Length: 466
Image (cartoon, rainbow, N blue to C red; front, side):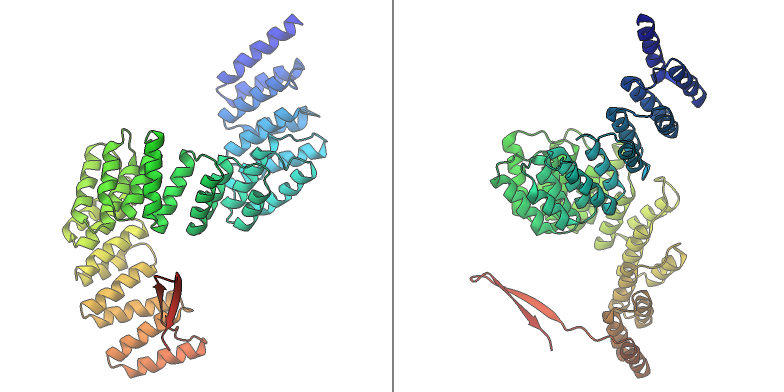
């Protein structure tokens, strides 16, 4: 018995130090010949070593061929390893193997499987797994329920997510945060804020993850009052402003037009990252304060923070709104020359074309359009269309409008734009041609509509142009 313990301990100590496939194969052979490969701790250590060397297929094969009835802990370890390695379908196939050889899963098995399916946005398999959980009587476990809720929220299936949430016998902070996050991802910001308020009434204290998601909702929805309340709550509870929480506050204040408060939060943070700087620069860009955005961009570089694609989009956008053509040209040139470690994306080209078009540099804007290695987007063509009308270049507007019709042949608004341009240019044949195209494609001009809220009766009326 002592010799068995010594051999097991020795091999276990060797596994974390494996450096090659040959080395781990030798240890595997020893495990099998000494008949200790089926011990749960040994099998788990072998899986961990295989994962470190990116040889999980070896561990998978080992479990399938050498362990006729592996312990559920061993199976969970293998499922978790594949889940963390983001290899699709394998975790579920291991579970299928478990059911085939009558190994009962436990409440640790299902959260890992749901997490794996959430990562790969596979709700169909998730619903099948959901059925298994109910049949096995584990639908009351809060960890299992939270993982199922997260799967449906990640896949945008908020009806199913809400159904799981409503059926939960007990809800914790993870349950509420998952619901809020799901609504936020789907753009249902009002539902997300209602859920956040209901969480307070339920007496469940939010955590930092809850607050970050709630602040993101406030930023997207323009709910400044709620955002300020969250900030006051953070202060009252004495929470430390870590990178994620501080960045979320900066983004909320900046997006809602309160750039001074955003700057105060920024100055009070001990630790910052690129996302923090991006949020501040975005705030200045949205406030139409391009010079400040460019200045903070320069300070960001001075302090050793590397700009990413988002940073450059925000700075170029700021230059566009303030008409800083020379600064924008310089930044775009540096980006094109590889200074930041990546080449311009279609969003950077869109910002640059918008900058040139707004400034009246129409020939340069068209040249930039023709040289970019991307198909023009609605934003790019919209910039050229507006600039052509502003600066009296109707042929440019015609070009942009015609391209928009090609891009979205089912959008009647673009046909109307093109028809109006032809009319403005006196090209009545063009007007008739566009109207004939609309008739042929069964498109109708959409009616204009305005909304008016009555202050005293809390009612919204719509006024439709006939």
